[in-house]
Image (cartoon, rainbow, N blue to C red):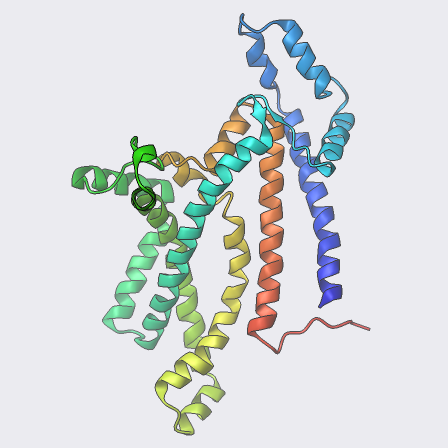
Length: 324
């Protein structure tokens, strides 16, 4: 297992280098840069722009610029955001926690509701509950998230019971600790629910199919023949084996902490990393784009590695052994 983790770590470094290189190349291959818009501002002198370009080696060849950025990353320097006029770490730090709250809440809703619904539908196959859940999950899976967010926002505006955007109310700073938590939870309802529906529908369908496949196995028939209760058969023998394929999905859900909520954040005005990355790409803020992409790649690699470890813990039949 240790050797497998070491091999994954070495391959992850190569993947991060490849992702960062091609991202840096794409940012330079597209026409224009951030300073083109600054040159149109009469309040910013050419000397200021030249000083920035010299400080960050923006006039050097592409490979030299990439080499300087890579050395700065190794020294813990993530660069400077020209659009926000602050270091990149300050921008990412202020937005990362917001996206984590939204994505973690969505993850809890998705797995806390999708898994039980999938089990319920499998145990009542072809009954009205199963057919109703199939129709609802197909509708939720087929509807684009941003369109669903607009519909929910419209319904909330007519109802008037939930905030329509943002993360905090205008009087947030004057609230007590309990009031601040409650206010944040109210603002989370719409974006977290919309973000969860599509993943919940997909997870429910996968769980239903896995449970139906496991319930047809011979060892389930043998367990029932031994006189075990249906609860023990379902939750101790069938569920654990049906849940194994879903562990791999946790890796991709972990990566969604950065990129999965982008459109929902924009529609619901949630101040997270998704909307930040869109602003950085549109403004050609190269160091902010590089840091955001690198962070997304790290989350994806860490998520997949955690999924592999969890799969070994859940299923003792899986072992990583030397081929020799």
